Image (cartoon, rainbow, N blue to C red; front, side, top):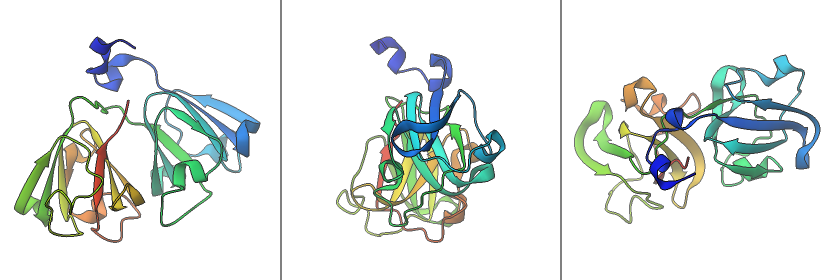
Length: 200
């Protein structure tokens, strides 16, 4: 891909492509996708145990219908479930649905964090990756509301990009996450201590 294309949103750059296997190390039944899959079991799979992302970023979900814990899937190989959930505080072998992240644009991403729900209180705008929000001056382990101004981001429960993952996209919820339970269906806390732009 040339530099001119790297500033375009993924949806303008072309195809998305992911291949999933039912067994670890790219063995067993396999299927390629260029669009979302709401339930891999409808394709005759019991589970997904390995993945290759060939184009575009994707988000995987623990359960069908894009529910449960989220996992960021960027270009590369994922031979076992630890490769996509290894830094999570809650490991799961399940991934039963997934979809492309169409608004990812690494060179043009901006997000605003707020200290209270509904975009109230002190705010901080950022357009770069932060492995520790507290180290950059955020004085809390919590982020009650987030507004994605452009691009797509993955927020993590703990510093160093560890713990639960929350995929935050400009084209979902109009980029507005007014309360922590809008971060994802498994969000039980507003604890966010690191955040980064999603690679495309």
